[in-house]
Amino acid sequence: MVKTLKLTETEIAVVTAAANRRSRSVMPLPVGIDRAASKELKLIQRLLSAGLIEERPTKAAGTAWRQDEAGQHIGLRITDAGKALASFPVPDAADGTGIEKLPTLPEDAPPAPRSKLGTVSAAIQADQGASLDELIALTGWLPHTVRACISRLRQAGTTIRMEATEQGRRYVSSPQSAGGAQ
Image 1 (cartoon, rainbow, N blue to C red):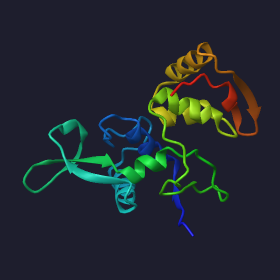
Image 2 (cartoon, rainbow, N blue to C red):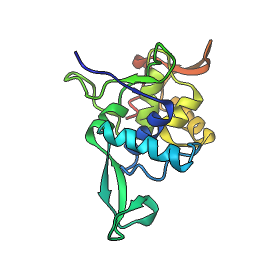
Image 3 (spheres, one colour):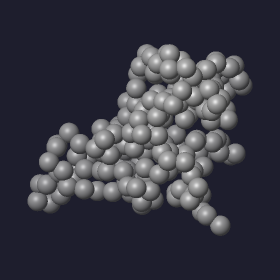
């Protein structure tokens, strides 16, 4: 039996943002995350202990989260396990306390999207599609940029519809209509 790891929406936003950066850097944290020192420290410690992120020396002070005793900047970088976890669709936890995610990829899992456009395409092709807020958290983009991405997918031939659900409005696409936006 594979142990599930419950992540909060904030933790998912941090892991996903880092997974979508070329540098794989966790810092700076995505917009909208509470930057209170105690909450930030707790968030980072939890992701470190789960093995989803790791500390690495860095020369860029802007991506450092602390300095060591010698004054060297220490940054945070997503691990391979964290990057693999970020490629899974995000199902809601039954108890409403967080998001259930598996820490490892199954052998037959499809490859992770190679771009944010691919990430958006994969998210809207999931069973329940994706809301604008979910797409913002996945990509780290502003709302108008997400909407532009949706337009670009439509121009590429992807059929995308807006559905009203109990959770709000969601973008939905069927996998057959995807125009190869990876």
